[in-house]
Length: 255
Image (tube, rainbow, N blue to C red; front, side, top):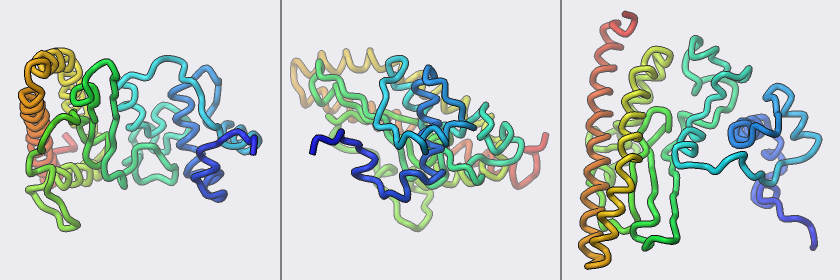
């Protein structure tokens, strides 16, 4: 037809395109990825309404894995649209403002693809269970052959054997005292992610060396590595869940 393709208009309903629940998240993303646009989140909704849905922008700087993870955790902190006033008024997941990081998220992923490496090593899915701000992004290389049973267990019935339900329960406990508990969770999970990202070049170098000899050896190595890192993070999450549940029950979170 000669009309410029617009992903949102093709795949989104007309009503949802301009609903505040979607435009606010879009604008939060634009402000994060391209601050040079000079958008103010208070005046940005008219900006979208007058000019239509933005089809896409070139970010001000190259998006890193860390930036993508940070993006998934946005609650509009530090802007007038932070309805919690810096978490002083409760959890950002329970406000009228539609945030990017919501409590209804089942999982989120940052997919990193590098064509100069074999696909088994070059493509890694950094995945978090449940709400991004209260979970850990751990790497899953496409060359792995299996995952720990904890990450294959889960139904609508809560189960302590399920990784997903652990992170879901942690979210529920933290949401009750978000302003206090988030400060106990985020630094711990951030430290795990920082260590995993720092180790990534060494892990991939080792995997590539093995791959050049026998791809199956590399696959086994990555399978063990991914499973081990995920289980380590899960163990930390379970301990945090135990500690914060106890603190919530005893009221010690106030101290």
